[in-house]
Each structure stands twice: as C-alpha cells, then as structure tokens.
Image (cartoon, rainbow, N blue to C red; front, side, top):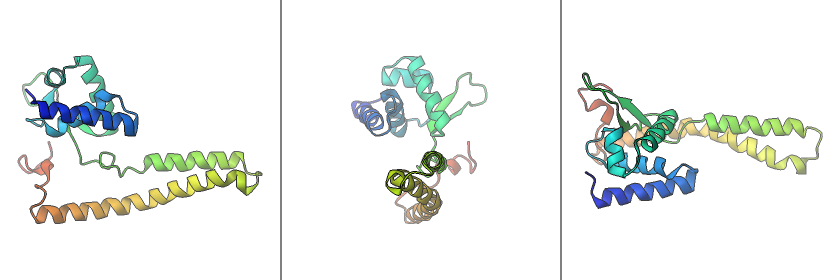
Length: 173
C-alpha cells in the first residue's frame, strides 16, 4: 500500500500534467505513482487500489500513456494480468520525439499556402511558426544524443543507476 508521501506526489504530478499538457488528472497521477511505487510494475487492480480510483479510470489512463509510449505492459509467464511500468527509453517519453514538430511545420506551411499572395505581415506568424518547428526538428536529435552522452557520464560517475532495461538479466523485458 502506498504511503501518504507517494499519494501526495502522485496528486502533484496529476496537477502538473493537467496544467502543463492538458492531460486528465488521472493520467498524471498514474505517471507520478508509477515513478515512486514499489514494486515498479503494478497491475491495474493494484493501481486502482493505490490511487483510490476505478479500474476503468486506471485502464483508460494506461491506454492513453501506452499510446504515447510512456509506459509498457508486460505479463509474466503463468500470470493472467498485465503489469504496467514507466518506460523512459522512448524518444517520446523523454520529450525528443520530433513528429509533433514536423506536424506543426506542415500545418504552418498549409496556412502559408493559403496566404501565398498575402503581404509578409499577414504571413509573419506562420513563417515563424514553420521556422521554429523546423528548428526543433533539426535540434531535437542533437539534444537527444547530448542527453544520452550526459546520462552515460552520470551513470559512470555513479550519480545515476545503470540502465533499468538491462538490470533484469541483461535484456529488455
């Protein structure tokens, strides 16, 4: 059973993700709880009990986060239920996924085509929008590589634990 501090942290995460990213509070609460719970992998029932939520609310949040690539489901041999855990290995989970910036650039260019004959002042917002999105598409892979090198340096210095994906027998679950 979670302690008060873990639930408080989950509630703070719920408010943060709702405020900053427009996610349902339960989605943020789930992210927060999965970041601090023990064991790291939890069933839907365990999560519902811990967060005092319905199984359907938890299942909906799990589906949402799974679609974003922020969590993984697994099932041990012989178990009849899935377990979920945070997965920080994807580009999307760490904020490095460029697909949304590509889409934003494409959307801005669609607007620019609509305003092809308009004066530059009218096109300015869309021009900057497209330029900024293109900048992020170009820079994010570089930042991701810099982060990975920095993370490895932190691991080598003992400031971060080793790769959680390889701590379970040397292979990803």
